Length: 219
Ligand code: SAH
Image (cartoon, rainbow, N blue to C red):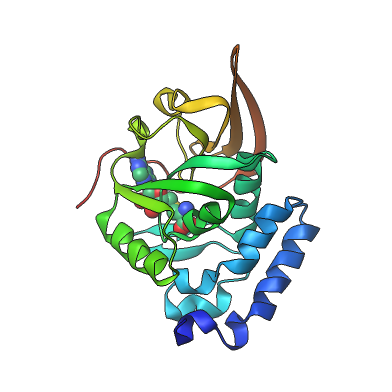
């Protein structure tokens, strides 16, 4: 591990454990998710100037007008996506800085993550390589279409808000699979879509605030 990963002061293991205690207080119960977040050094995913705030309960800018979600939102989404199951294949839409992909890669065997902005994707790739995480495949592309060839997925997590349910993504869930997404424009809610033998069920959950899902890719 290099100095940045080793972490000193505000970025130490102790700071990370305080974040985990806060997540418990906020109602996160899934120990698998909490363990994953206790292990992933969140500070290396943000610019060094912001590293001291990496474990606070805030969203932070990651460049290109995008943000990394606050720790509670990441924990909540991954907990919902897992639904207490063992995950084999997971798809994330919106890699951003790669933090949530790293958390997912600790709770799933194989993670595919799509990002439309090549600039963010290449930075995420460097960080995930630094951490030696080999079970994440990053794809430059528009997440609206998902990754049909790699599916079906046990879980799909969207890190950007859609205006309507992307049916192409729901179709890439396996039976028993779960899709978690922020839905809406000015007012957004987390929505959980579950696929079962008879079709799909939808639960509308917490109020959230995400950057919008945007069509098309940028080199
Ligand atoms: N999970 C990320 C959060 C990133 S914010 C993290 O841990 O940092 C949401 C990301 O979704 C942004 O990087 C944005 O560029 C990306 N995005 C928006 N629309 C997209 C689309 N149609 N396909 C893929 N990525 C998209």
